[in-house]
Every structure is written in structure tokens, then in C-alpha cells.
Image (tube, rainbow, N blue to C red; front, side, top):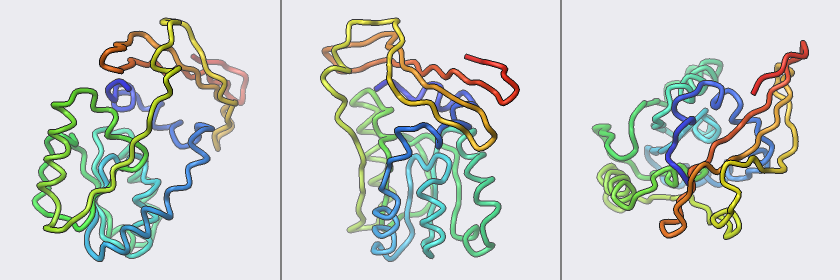
Length: 212
């Protein structure tokens, strides 16, 4: 994968993130909530995004700190937390920082990285910095649950650089926008197994306006 790129920079990425069709099939929230409850102590979620896992964890009675580099993602997370009960809000703390360098002043029974934020780190140096930093924030005997995925060989060896591809179905946001997402590889390094991928969103508004 490439670095976080537009995930950090663009508000529209955060705005559409939770509605992308392939993401709707994720069934990991219960797993992380149960792991957090079993930890019997504070939890650190690295790459908390819009609160998809963080908020259910706080609802379950667990103290949790959510870390993310994207201010846009954290804004949505704060808005969602804002409609929760005072008790849930008190259990959750949000921090905008870099997973490689953050300092929180506390340690945790459990750290998690749901849905592969670790793979936005594309150098071994950055990956080790992140892992060492998380380790510094774990209690003695604390655990890290690290989620990663194996990109397909086909994806890593595509030759159609610069061409759009993808067959994800259209999705509709709660405000009625119809969105199609496509991918474009703008550069890749086969030896390092790194792709620089551009995500392209085609948006049709309820009034018929179109935007790319």
C-alpha cells in the first residue's frame, strides 16, 4: 500500500469512508469489543478513524484512547461521540497524532489496530518505529492485536499504470448521494511490493449534479 495520503488530507474521504460497499461486510467489531473487555483495563486503538470500533468499545464499559492522524476522521468520530451518553463520552479520549511518534503519558492493557492502518507505513523503518512506540505504551504483559491483509499477487503486478479499474458496486450515502469508487495505480515498486494508489470517487447528488 501507499502512505495514508488522501485519507489524512481530504475531508470527503472521511465523509464517504464508512459507506464504501466493500467495507460494509466487516464483521470485526464484536471481536475487538470482546478483546477490550477481556483486557480488564484501558485500551489504545491506533487508527481509530470515525469511531467504528471505538464507540462500541466505550459503550461496553471500557476506557479507550483513540489515536488517528486524520483530523477529518476524528471530527466525524467526535460528532458521533457527541450523541452518546455522558458515561460513554467519559470513557473515550481522542488524540490526533502520528502512530510512529505519539506520546500519551499512560500505558494500556491492550492496543489494537483495526482494519489495517499499520499498512499505511511503507518502510521498515516506519513500521519498526510504530511497533516500538506501541510497545512503550503497553503495560507489562499487555497485548497488541495487529490487523493486516495480504494484497493479491494480481494487484501487486498490474501493468495498467494510470488506468482506472475496479468493479465495486455503487453505494448511497444517508443524504442521498450516489457514489462509485474506482482505483488507479499511479506508481509501483515490484521489488518493495509497494503500490501508490489513487482512489477516485464519482458522486451524483440528489439534484443531478455530478462530481469527480
